[in-house]
Image (cartoon, rainbow, N blue to C red; front, side, top):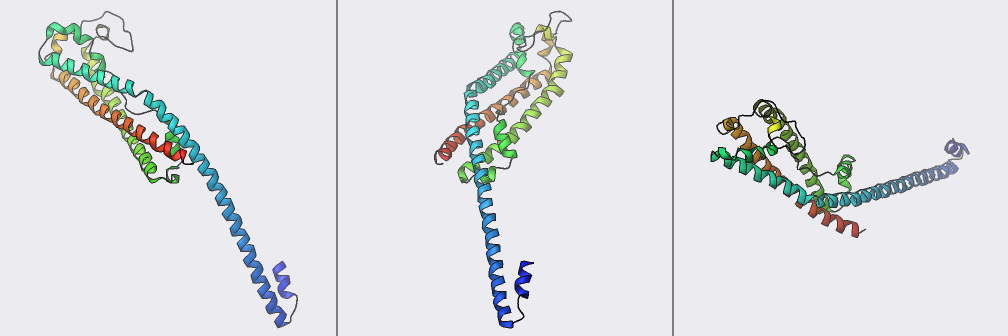
Length: 246
């Protein structure tokens, strides 16, 4: 309306041309003001978002450092199970029926699923917020992207391991072994019931294959644990450099 009034103030052609120039200049100034305001708003939003990204990086570093503290436990736990697995295979291969008492104490490792995935809920939240592209440091961005792929792979392996125990190992154990007659680390079963024919296990191909397969799975998981630990150590170093540069 104000612009229309400016144009209609005079019917004089020269004055009208002057007013048109004035209107164009006014439009330019208004447009420039809007663009500047939008630019300031975008800059402020970027600054706020970048601050949020930096806060995530601080917490991710703490999260990874906490996971590193558990590294020796993860490795020892998997290595212990691998050693138990080798011992069982050695007893079966050598037909050491006089060592059934030893065998009873070693079967726990095949009956429980393991995990190699680190507990990193803050990092996963960071990924879900799609903040990864906001990382300016290319090396750090690539390392965090590798971690994203590693977590996805660990999820697949963990789920496969759980299904294997649930669908293959447990059914065999339920049909062939009295839980009250073997060592089990997390549950304490009552004694009694039918006796397990442990001698039959030495000639049972399915049992041998289950034990052998579980051993191969544990070795694969240990490699994944070692990879995740190496990734966490490298990522922590890069996070240190990135945060110290702020």
